[in-house]
Image (cartoon, rainbow, N blue to C red; front, side, top):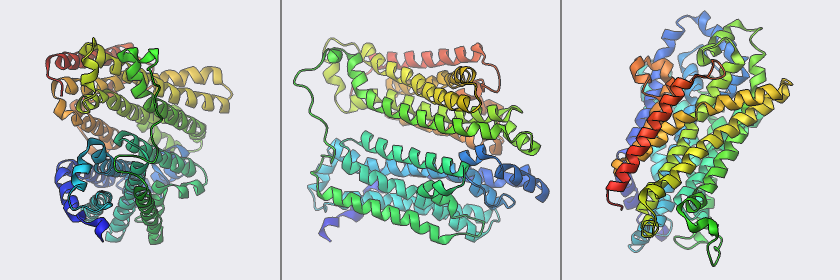
Length: 529
């Protein structure tokens, strides 16, 4: 077919460009699985201990909401599928959507797609190549899962089911990104829309699993778990993500036929003939650039806060009836108060996500530079520090706002349920805001890289991934204390489990400030471009 001419060449080109990024992604995910699977026998060596553990998890809507419904916690394979299923499904979805958006809308945005299409390349070849590369990455992940778990002595059938379930779940979000790339005009917007779908899928799965489980059937992440690896596998469930991926890809092709190269189905509204007074300075321009992401992140955190606030009361009510459960959940949060431990665990996850917003907003400085838009701003009477600080202002304030939205929503919903809004709302709002300095440290690191090593700004995302690894599987990796102490989240008081302490928060704020100043100094001294 002429419309697909050149697909093979574009696939080879994409694989060459991803030769570092993809192996790092896949290696990290397999390492997480290896750490969890190899540690279960040490944590729970006897069948009786595993049964008690399974009993506690099965009656805990909080952990079920965070990680999904367990189907077999007695076997090592079943435990591995439950413990890492939802987190890896989310990370695989993120990998896929970024990959597809980068090689479709990102190529058009930079103008490279126009050069490629000038050769003998079919109309749909770039889109097809991006989806093929995503599918290959998911297939490689499934093979690595099979090899890893079989080497550890687990059932090959369950390993195949787990690898395919997670891989196909990730492919769904790659296909979703292919669709949003036809709608949005920028790679950032396409990734943002697909990321919203990923977050919604996780929220739907979490809400459904915490209740009767029916709602989870509306989520691709839920499908991955409903395949039930190592627990009487349901092979037919794999048809759901496969069918949805094909459907989304077909719709993306149909939309690609209806639009011009470089344009999106959703065109930007024409601007005013004359700029408003708010755009007279760099601060107003920065707000115009950040407001869409800020509002989207705030709404998402508001929704997650309300959802987890509705679950927190159920978690706390299980303590008296299940002492084994109290021990399990208290290890996650460091306190016998199960509800507070659950809240602390949720805020730890949300704080890492908020750090992603801070990094994204900070790296907008580098994006404006590489997009050759910074020169137009700096060509006027605007200094580099003033320009950089305008973006950093919204990165810093934005982190506080989205965490406040999560804490306020959780406090309000939980307070209504326990008839104590006046106490729970400020308490949980403060518990959320305690994590702001840790998020600022990641923003400071991103700024330091922008100023000192602009070609290495992706390192900030890698560091965030490492910190997420510490949180998700740190207990299984048996990492040394000095290594865990490199994470700012290790030093953040786990409010409301413990009382807030000013000293570590002030130290984190000082580190964030030092990194930021380092980046600003470097930005002022180096060449722009």
